[in-house]
Image 1 (cartoon, rainbow, N blue to C red):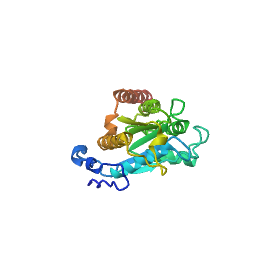
Image 2: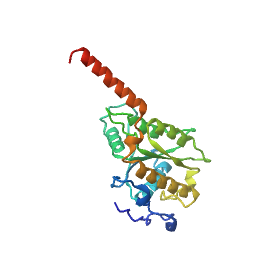
Image 3: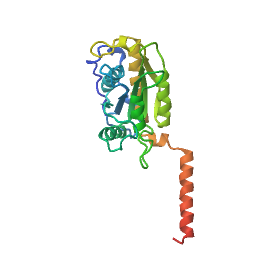
Length: 246
């Protein structure tokens, strides 16, 4: 696949001379996937002027500039976990988008020193496993938060624990935007600043990790303990069958 030309026409804060396409010669191995990376973005506020949504939309613009295919999930109307069945339209939409994705971005406001219930509910609706399929295992993950006051990392630290629990490859870099009300203009666009540059760093790193991990995640998350348990289960079933004369 030829790298798409970075399109910075909708990224006025970008220094194009410093923004490089992610080089195929450095990212790809033999037999690599050739489709555009698929990225799902989740945000954690239902407010009309939602800074976590604004930040996710900035991240989406950057992802598209780097050649990704994106979906932003709207959490409005998503019921509380276990309040309805999994056939609810919003639950089904979220789970299908999670399965579709190869990478995800989670962004939450910090509320009472923690991530919001809106973001946590979305994560809680994503199962650890569906039959033999683990919807999040081996997918890459980037974390961001917005705060009304001084810079904090409580929400991203909580989400990092959840990402590890969901068996996701959570990238080292992360973004925390303090006093978010000062960082976005009336149109919801993020103003140029070192904080914006950090968001670019996070998205660039997510794309690099996604290119390197996808197509290899089954191998990367293959575990000794699970192989051992599966072998012992097969041996036990074989002994039962032999005992029954089958």
